[in-house]
Length: 495
Image 1 (cartoon, rainbow, N blue to C red):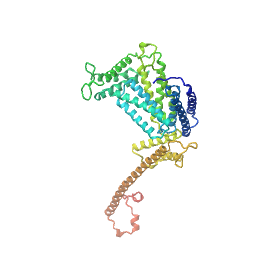
Image 2: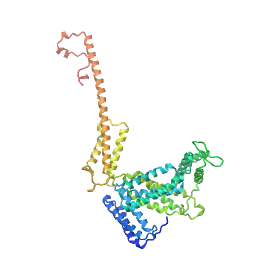
Image 3: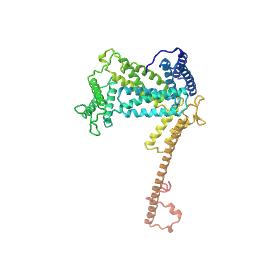
Image 4: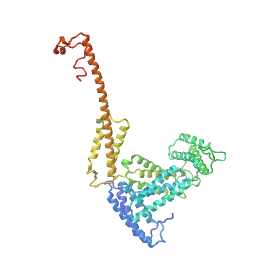
């Protein structure tokens, strides 16, 4: 859609207010000395809605003059930041929190539409997420300005999704397995090529897989279905395009001719660094990620994405214009995908409660792992977990976790997690006690059988000695102890 960087004179006041709010949000984002507060975030959000209301009123007076301008760009930045703030304070199921996801999904769909390299398997989770966001927006009571902005963004995403979905329908269903294989091979090749230190040996299995797929083509280059063993017309051009892309890419990589244009090297370096950083966050996000930090990565990616002209990054040598474009686009799309995954993995817990949530999650995982490995032998083995749970439970006041005098979002999640940990521990304790009782009963049965045998043995031994009870009084019998008879002190009875 065409846009301009100019600011209409009648929108100058709105632009100034939005710029001021964006600066305030940026300062809050950088401040790590205190946790973000949901009340502060909601207050700023309401201020933004008032500004948007004022903007709409101004534009109603000039209906024919509006073209997306600098004001819309700043407004998008503000909503993007606020959306991440809502996620950070644990309001992940609120309507404003969905804006960041919608922006990322929109970018992903644009790239899928451009590449035409995807399957129904790739589109399914995106459709499910769009439906989920649609339900969140429709179920939450929102202001008119908020409703307009969010629904407009959601509508754009659905339009892009429908366009993408219509293109994938061109491939016949019977050829879908070959399509999946070719797309998977291409992605693996790009993943290898994206690493500056790749080894040509890594290409051998991918090349062999491509050769195997090529055996299903006839002399005209048409692919035969793996399931029906028939040739279908719909989708042949898509499959051949993918096959040719993979073939050329393998040849370039094998010959080490995969050199980037000088203009592309800085872009490549930035994308590799971004991808590495984001992949690290996937591992450490529970302890290091503040969702508002994702705004910086999103802006960096958007800046790089906007460098493209007609879908390609500009080069200094037209003869090498195609070299490295696929790798750069792969890196760009991979970064968007990781950001999307980070957004979707956010827990509905405020950052103030995140340390407690992480500890409870760790205890839960440990308890489940112990249970999976066969449980415990005695209740003592649960003491460390019970002590940790008790220490976390003692942080509550009237059933709530309070931080700096505030009641952060996520109380229900933490209380449910704490209760689940107690239940798992109690289940293992009961199982251990049942096992102890069963073992005690078995020992008792063995013990009783042993005593009966020993008593019979004593009687037989006395009879063999020809002893007559009538010839001895009780004291004499007590004093008499044959050398081969078990002593009373060492017998099972004494025990």
